[in-house]
Figure 1 (cartoon, rainbow, N blue to C red):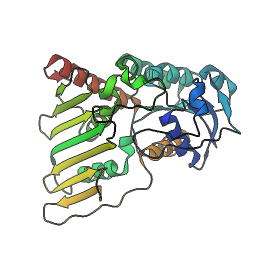
Figure 2 (tube, rainbow, N blue to C red; figure 1 turned 30 degrees about the vertical axis):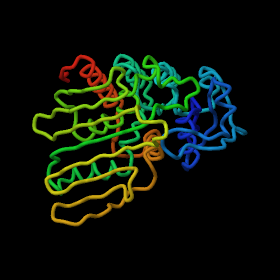
Figure 3 (cartoon, rainbow, N blue to C red; figure 1 turned 60 degrees about the vertical axis):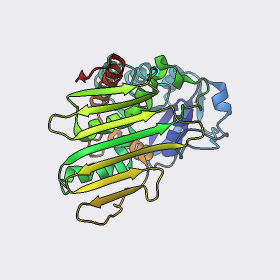
Length: 335
């Protein structure tokens, strides 16, 4: 039985709580939250831009801490879900890894490459697993699309367009999302989902060219691959507050088009060039539950496909930072 602690009980902490609670072979034994208002609100609506975060959380039977050092020294957990604001990821992960705990750390990995390197070094020195929560790599529709592309059954990808639209996150108690020094801004928090998926599917591009508004609340990037495909991704926190949330993509292959749009029914279809369309079978669960399950399989020694490494997550940070630089300076940036 893997004993799990969750550090940070905001929206993503609640999401991890739901996933861990449903997973056989794991038990939440502790939570850590320094904000008393957040702890007091765990029976309120979770907020967030996607469904699935736990509601009405009962902390009885759990050890509750307001200090990470106290949780680590308690010996109550074997692994931590770190669901803190981004600027706290690196220090929390390094501390936990050096204390002998496995770490599942939410994306983005950190605010800069140097902090990513510190996290990777701590994982290697401790021999403990560090997994970054890039949930889109585990999201059923994105997984099936990757498998279809890699199978070669429909030929090469000619072009791909990915979109992610949201209002500015308003569910954090102190609006840390809006503070670029703590969140990295919209590109590093929201846009990074699609950037990482592009990195996962096609590898690192040769260069990126981006446009953005002055605060980069909106960004659109062209990812240059010498032999194709043509890839573009755009995202924004500039939608009206009443706008719900959209994540979507179109992939044009030589022999088919793959369509996904969270807001449509059906939201996922494959259109072969020969005609007709079909909805592929999807694996169970969502990206959050599947990444937690994968992490558990890794730390318990099961043989599983490698989906995400800390080094890959580091390179995704480098890629997004290049996008931000390209938008700021108005010129392509080579990787």
